[in-house]
Amino acid sequence: MSTPTNLKSTGLKATLPRLKVLELFEHSTKQHLTAEDIYRMLIADDIDIGLATVYRVLTQFEQAGLLIRHHFDSDKAVYELNVGQHHDHLVCLQCGHLEEFFDEEIERRQKSIAAERGFTIHDHSLHLYVDCNRVNCPHRSAIK
Amino acid sequence: MSTPTNLKSTGLKATLPRLKVLELFEHSTKQHLTAEDIYRMLIADDIDIGLATVYRVLTQFEQAGLLIRHHFDSDKAVYELNVGQHHDHLVCLQCGHLEEFFDEEIERRQKSIAAERGFTIHDHSLHLYVDCNRVNCPHRSAIK
DNA sequence: CTTGTTGCAAATATTTTGCACCCAT
DNA sequence: ATGGGTGCAAAATATTTGCAACAAG
Image (cartoon, rainbow over all chains, first blue to last red; front, top):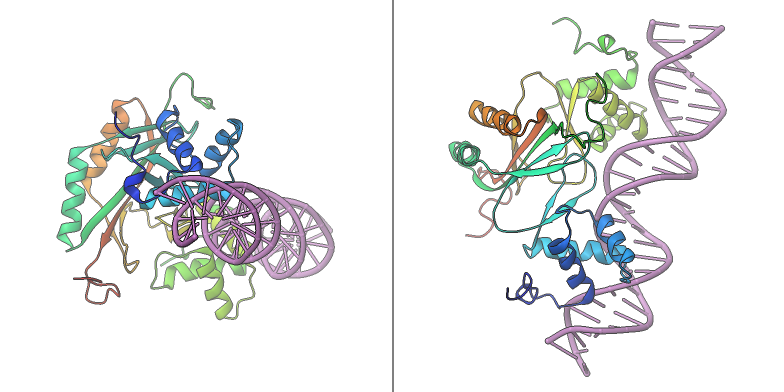
């Protein structure tokens, strides 16, 4: 399939750090990564990169629309590949497990809510914080 | 009206910093405040308080259920009084203007989405990022 | 070549923690 | 009086920036 989420189209030069970061997002099993995650993974992979560069690249990619930034509940930002198809998130408060969903009806209601007020909706973020109750959830039924 | 969002009921002692912080939330025209906001307002009000104390008090109040913490888009947390009635937020990307809303249908859909997956929903956050287009919005129709 | 990009170190920004002193109960 | 609470300073975290060296177009 053509270029791997074309870098050229963004006006950014195709440098090693940038290619490696994109590669990570495209191949990692985890879709949502923090700057620290990426830095560690690349270092572990013997790529000589600086944490500052990771931050810079992530910021550039976000502005270029290649990545999407989220904050979820914590203080640190996580990024995911922007695959066009918008979706929202379910986050397990116990184990951090993350799932995505999309609901037409919710999208529709959001639009009317903004429209009713004469606002132009640019974007939204919706996170559902849950206990996932999966068998492998570390904190499953922690108590009782 | 009885006690001002009763502190005693939380098991926390009624100290000056705590009372002043609560007072701020109850009387300020701005409902959403950062630790820094609060610190500055109290200092400006000649209350001798430390920023660390503000952080501690906010954390305690959040755990006690008196305040709700949000992250919106920025890196810093904002707090608002927990008035029982849950609601979501509309945030103007241009001027920071904030409005609240509540939509039965969205609430309902969220519950089913979690339920469908066998998840127990604890909480959620929904922010709509908009251009508010109000006359006094500093960046109103910045361009065209 | 020339300008964008990088790694490093230092700077910021936000929030947390250790500790000795202080004050509500 | 006594255990929780406070201010201050220092630590911890997360992210940004200055700068000289470097590399892509």
